Image (tube, rainbow, N blue to C red; front, side, top):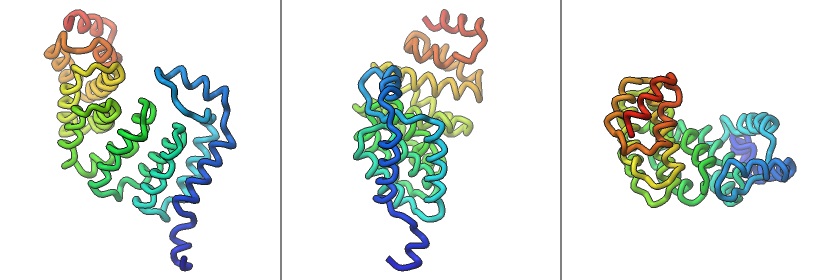
Amino acid sequence: MTTSEQDRNPFGPMEAAQEAISYFKSHADETRAAGLQRYFKDPVNNYGIEYRPYKEWKAEFLARLTGHWTIQEAVEFCDTMIEDPHMESRGIGYQVVGAFVEEADPDLLGQIRRWLEEACGNWGLVDNLAPSVLSPLLRQHPQLVPEVKGWTSSENQWVRRGAAVGFVSLVDDEGFRDAAYEVATELLDDKEDLIHKAVGWLLREAGKVDRDRLEAYLLDKGPRLPRTTLRYAIEKFPKEDRKRLLEATR
């Protein structure tokens, strides 16, 4: 490696991955890991890392990469980290890609879908990957919206949840808001409770921007709405309005 390459890249994806794994292993807490399991229906692998020191470590870790890595190196790092099944390892992989996503081209969408299919396995990792990487990619490349809307027909529930969660932070834009309602509608008949919750979250955020539209949508869909979705969607409504909508959509 030349001196200029060393200046550009202080440590590569493999070295960074080894450092991250070493941090997680040295700060693992079995008791905390067991406690985190209560948030998940199925068993999950996690190191039980304490959040506050991890947040400080992550900020320092990302700062060392900024200005030195490219999106390609970030993706390589992520692909290495997802070989470890623990949530923290996969999560930092997604966070690193998110730090470089502004320079990504549309082809990154294929990687995102692969990670959803092969390296999530629970709602927590989907809710890390989708806002960190998918949402900003869609904002930069809105021509990808139709493809992501098509994810609602995937047999993989994490891909379907990713489609919903990916639009949560985009509903401030009217064009994305239209797509968000289309995604919600496609997922109303889903059988998975975690999809019902994701759709309710998406609708709730859309309602913060345009409450009248959300209320009209809920009344229009009526009994087709899963009750979990409805309760999430109207969570921020005044009590009397929540009661009225719960009764009107039975």
